[in-house]
Length: 327
Image (cartoon, rainbow, N blue to C red; front, side, top):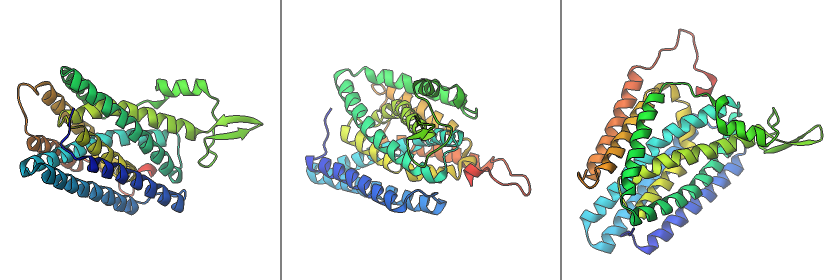
């Protein structure tokens, strides 16, 4: 696999990611454990989206300056924003699972930031490896694209079937395995992963939460990474759009956690997006669907789903309140 992106832009990309994580850690340490408000989540979401758009502009300029082709620069910018949007939209389902995990373990809101931060770092490392390996496989064996496409189709159908159903975390095999492997305390000990009770060293529920969040990201990465390869085979576009989408995951979580009940049909829209992308990948050698059209379809599906969710949102009884997790 090859890329038209100059070497210096790779260095800029790595530098931006490292600096962003360092600044995020500094802010996290300075603020300490605290509950993230909707206003704070919106502000940080705007920061991450703005950073991604600015990087897209730099990408456009770098390709335009290096190749002398405005058309090629436009194409690469469209590929980036389409991949970014797909990753962002698929992350929504990931976030709902995080919300379920936090609710199940009754993780205090003040501790959730650290869990998500560690999850983001793990996701960046994991997805970088998976994207590089996936890119190499596609370059060596073109027919793997058809397997990716079929996988996304099946995943989309399964997601549609499971949409609206309450997941049963208690029967989760990963959780059962973790509890067999390590003795777990019934109580949190601040943000610590281990505690001492009656002279015995026990894992806290926080460690289980971290482990489940990591496992969840592995599962969702298997779904989302092939989806971007349906848009472009450029390794830089695939990696950068994916990582920039992940950087804003923490702010996006706290924002969507406050609005989860308002977008109850979103899982159906994500299922349709996966089916569309899977079909596009399986027909890649028969029908060339333009990137701009793909972007329009994805945006249209998500916008329609969100609009229908708002129109059909269940009304609260008079004098009733939203559940605590959604306030």
